[in-house]
Length: 118
Image (cartoon, rainbow, N blue to C red; front, side):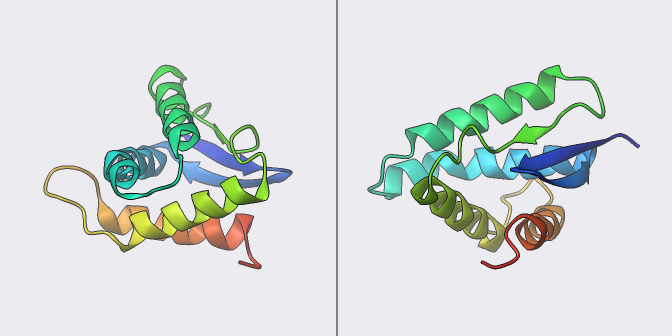
């Protein structure tokens, strides 16, 4: 089974491609709701999610890496992204959208590895 990575700085979290796909589906699913209910400018996050999903769809197995550095360019964006990941992990998946258990497990793992102090 192919494995890709989520990278921030010099730290990588390796994720099976199928599980990464579930994570990206969940992150993309909740973004329109977040944009419509959050007063902050989240356009950059919507663009980031679009780019990650496009890479996932177009790259071959094992090369579907999610690069965070370009998008989390300052502390405010990093904090917003962490809050959004936690928000996604707290939501139940609507029927036929994504596997919520996989998403929760992967978000927990990503947070533990990439942001152990937060």
